[in-house]
Amino acid sequence: MKFFVDTAEVDAIAELNDLGMVDGVTTNPSLIMKSGRDILEVTKEITDLVDGPVSAEVVALKADDMIAEGRKLAKIAENIAVKVPLTWDGLKACNVLTNEGNMVNVTLCFSANQALLAAKAGATFISPFIGRLDDINLDGMQLIADIRQIYDNFEYETEILAASIRSVNHAFEAARIGSDVMTAPPDVIKKMADHPLTDKGLDAFLKDWEKTGQKIL
Ligand code: G3P
Image 1: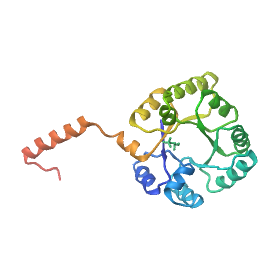
Image 2: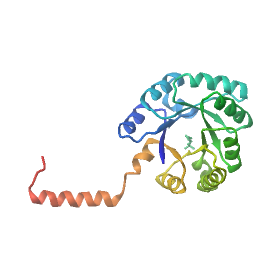
Image 3: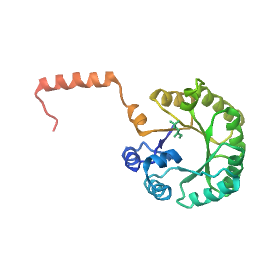
Image 4: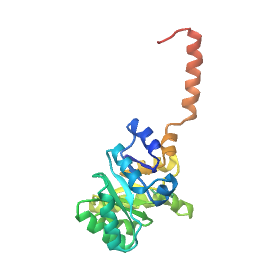
């Protein structure tokens, strides 16, 4: 499974990128607001750092305006994926921008039918929001499983990008179901390394090692 980092914080992306953990980055208007940075500047910085797709989201609501914004964002770098919302206008914009040779990430997906439409419109990525479905007592992971089945039934090439990942369990389930990509905040990716038995085992090894009086270096 590919790992995208869901943030516009350049330092956090760089830290994970140095470990080879970053296959791409996703941003959205809320993450740009949180970074306090100018969208064009910070997105350019991220595209310079990361080889994989970097999603930058349009904010217009009408298809023509989304297309104009998408074309501007796509000019930032070759690895931009233009992010459009899953509305009828967003699907129109997806189709036009895809036919112009751009990567398009269709976001704010909350149903399998929406994901089917995005694939028909030629989306490169579909972003189902797991956490936000769980927030309202629905099953976000079931949505990933349903989309996986539908895309496999008809061999759609659109990649499933599990988004709104809030926990290590979300990450595990998305991988188990066969999501092509997950996008997660840096702290969730880092927490995937944690296990209390690893810490306990390491502690015991180091105590025993001290008793040997040896040194490796
Ligand atoms: O990639 C979409 C993601 O940023 C949404 O996450 O936690 O705001 O639902 P969240």
